[in-house]
Each structure stands twice: as C-alpha cells, then as structure tokens.
View 1 (cartoon, rainbow over the protein chains, first blue to last red):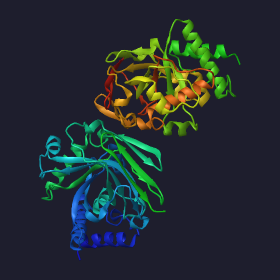
View 2 (view 1 turned 180 degrees about the vertical axis):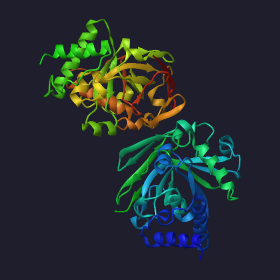
View 3 (view 1 turned 45 degrees about the horizontal axis):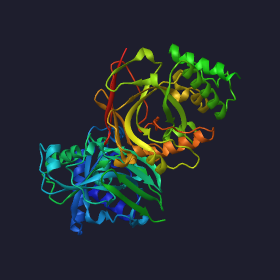
Length: 259
Length: 259
C-alpha cells in the first residue's frame, strides 16, 4: 500500500469509527497540498466503489479570515456525495457527525458544464441554472480540528453534510456580492455576512473551482451542486441545536441536531 | 457632582479636539448610567443653546460583540445635531477630530411620533417614512477610546459626524435584517455584515430606543432621522482614506479623509 492509500484508509477509518486522528502534517511535515488532493481523490474513489455518487463540489477557505487562520492565500475544494444531503428542516443524528460546525452559504446548480482553465465569473453566472440558500455542516476527521491546509484537503476539505433550502432562484436579478445572510442558532443571531465575504463575489469562488479542477482534468458538470463558501464564520454545533440561515432574496434553510 | 460642569468639560474636549481621561477615573468614580444620561442631557442643552438643532437620536452598542465587550444588556443612545451632518461624497478633515472611526449603518426617517413603552419592531416599521444608508463617524472624547459605560453615555455616545446616502427607500420594500453591507476603504473591504447584526433587526433598535426614551418621559418625533447602530465594526480613519459603504438595495454612501 502506498502512502496515499494508507492516509486515505486512515481517514476513512476515522470517519467510520468516529475517532479523530492526529494531523497528517504532524507526522509528515513534507505532506504537500498536491499529496493531499491525491489522498482526497483516493477517498472519493473508494467511496464511489462502495456506491456513493458525486453530486457536486464544495469550496472551502474562501474568506480572508479563514485563509489567514491557516496561513494560505487560496481556497480549497472537496467533493459532495449523495449521502451527505440532509433534507431542509429535518433532524441530523449526532451519531452521523464527529465535531460539527455550521456555516451559511449560497449553493449554485449548473445548467451546463464548466471546464477550466480561464473560466471567468461571468461564465459562471451564464452557466448557473439556479441558486439556493445552503447550510454546510463541516466536520473534521482530524482530532480537535488541529488542521493545516494539506490536512483539510486530504480530509475532503472537512466536508460533512449539507442542507439546501429555499426556492430555486435565477441569478440574473440578484447582485450576489451584496446579498446579506444571517445565521441563527436556537433562534439567536450568531453572526451575519454578505456575498462579498467570499472572494468578493460567490461566482468568483466557482470560477476558481472550475480552474483549479482543470489541474486534475476534472470538469464541473451540468446539474452539479456547488457550495460556494461560508458567508460568515463556522459555528460549533452541540446536540439539540437548531440552525437557520436566512439569505436575502433566497429564503431560508434550517437543520436540527438530535439531542 | 456638578453635571453642567462635566458636560461643559466634555463639550470643550470636543470643540478643542483634545482627548481627556475618562470622567469615572477621578471626577465621578461612582457615576451611574442614570446620572450619565443626565450629564448627556446637559450636553444636549448646551449644544441647543449654541444654536444647533437635533437631527435625531442614535443608537450605540447594538451588536452582541460590543454589548458583551462592555458587559451590558441594552444598547445606549446619544444625539446627532445638524452641524454633524456631512454631505455624501465630500471630504472630512482629520484636524476636526481626535481619533475618528467609521461604521456603516441604516438610518430610519420617521413619518410619525413613536412613544413607548411596549413598542415593537413592527410598530417602528409602520411609523417609518423611509430608510437610508449612513456612514457614522464616531470620535470618543476619551483617550484611546478607553471608557466605561457611564463615560460613553455622558460623552453623547461618541457621536461626531454622519454621512447619509441619497437613495431613500420605503422600509417595506426591503428585508432590513438581510441587507448585506460592505465597508470599503481605499478599495479594500474592511468589514461586512447584514442588518441582523443590529439587535436582530434594525427596527428592533429603534423600538428599544423608543422604550428607553419613554422611561425619561420622552419620545421619538415625526421627521427625526435615527441611526440604528453599526452593522459593521468601527474602523479607524487615516489621512487619504476613501471610504464607502454599499448596502443592498440602499445604494452607496461615501466620503474621503484629508488632513
């Protein structure tokens, strides 16, 4: 077994047994982002072999604050699989997560494929079928979220579950850079955000993704869901918590954790 | 304690642009919130005697973060006067201030009086003629913005200047809690948020104000313009800054800073 498979297995077992592992970069300081994407792709390949289907992508580390926290200057991405979808308004068993945090963001659904390099934000807008408000439940298979950039990339960009809400809206009459968002936890405002928080405009994030994926010869496909990045800081979730994100013009989306 | 003398002391600091040690440090160590509002009232009277007129009250400490920082449950208020209003798109001079900071807000222009107690956000919206974007410049008269709650109340809630935008909207045309807001200085986004950052909804801020004013037998008056509190944090101003705020549906408001 090579190191990519070995690390992939370690993360898969951590997820299955719900026991966080030490950061891969702790044991292997030379573990690079390129190595890390190879681990992520290996994990996704194994999950596909066990019947999971790719339904989209997520972009992480899109805010300046998050990038500064990890000492990086670009986002990262992960894969969305069909088993990660949670129905709007439903309950998530705390058995399905390890150390979840919740973020509010805008989801894009494409009406045609996007293939980098050189994809622009304008092309993203033209290729967008509709947008939705989304809650992303991020999670880490690394103990206590003690992650560096390669650790989160290998761990499928700390993907957990996601919830799509609202009513599909066309993108052409909405200035997404100025769309406001409020994240409520148990009915109280925990933070607010705006579309410009993610690389100036959520479509910039999707363009970055399309271009980054071209390095791996991957295309964004028609119908894929793309979570474009958190509009405000991730908030820790405890058993029994209810989260709601309200996004201007797009409606709201909520989820409850089992107690 | 001579309240008029303390009010005059703070007014002199404002007029001479000379910061002072907080009044609770030695002048009035046991100053209560109630007494602080009495000093503020003296200050307001002095300004009225100098020929200035009230534009409207303003709310401060409306974000959870600021309330927590000051360890208070309620926001505070102060008053904006006609000589504090700066035209949109013009320049302010640093020499007119001690250590100015700027924050982006939504202002309510009332079409009716609002008298507490028991006023709710919905009643505020019904009594509001228009809403407009605003940049508020705060400038504490205290050294290094070092103050306790009674200090800042006596100091007219750090009021200094305000720039109103020139796009007025009916409040019912907007979801004011979801108005995405970006505060940009010299082309760089320095802070952002949505209307809900202000006690859950900017109209709640006005309702709390009406209820607080009722306790001293006062009310909000038809035609007053009320600053509801910062959606963004307060950002320090420097010579040469070009400052603008964009609020979704409320356009843009800006000013520049010269020596």
